[in-house]
Structure formats: C-alpha cells, structure tokens
Amino acid sequence: MVNDNEKQGDRSIAGMKGLESAIANGETDRVKQYLATEMLGELQKSYLIDLANTSDNPEIAKLIDETPTRP
Image (cartoon, rainbow, N blue to C red; front, side):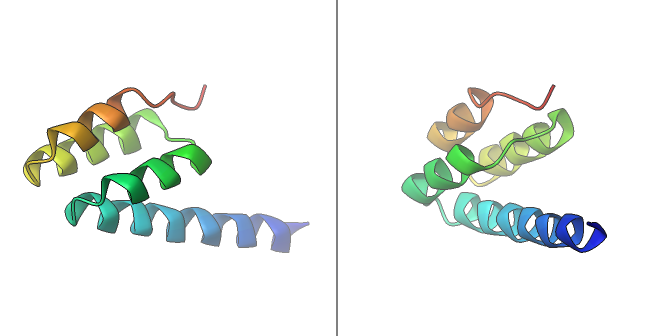
C-alpha cells in the first residue's frame, strides 16, 4: 500500500510541475486540463496565482482563483 501512495505522490509532483510550466508559458488550455484533474491546497493555489500574475497572465490567475481547494 505504501508503494501506491508513493506512485500517487509522484503523479502529484509531476502534475504540479506540468501546471507550473503551463502557467509560465501562458498555455491556458493546458492549465484548464491540469486544474480539471488536480486538487489544490490553499498554499499551492496562492503560489500558482502569484506565478500567473508574475507571468502577466490574468486569465490564468482567474482560472486558478476559481478552482476549489482541498478541504
């Protein structure tokens, strides 16, 4: 069972890196795809919004802001 958790953790890390890359590159459609499958924590969400704003992507920042967070 530990291995399953490790695999899920690896996928989450890969997903987060892919999401960061899509935000930095201004790839709105890709960001939408990632947000449809990823559940963000408050800190992750805040960080990604800052990244989008730094990359001058207000549309992407809005998408992230509207994404539900983990309870």
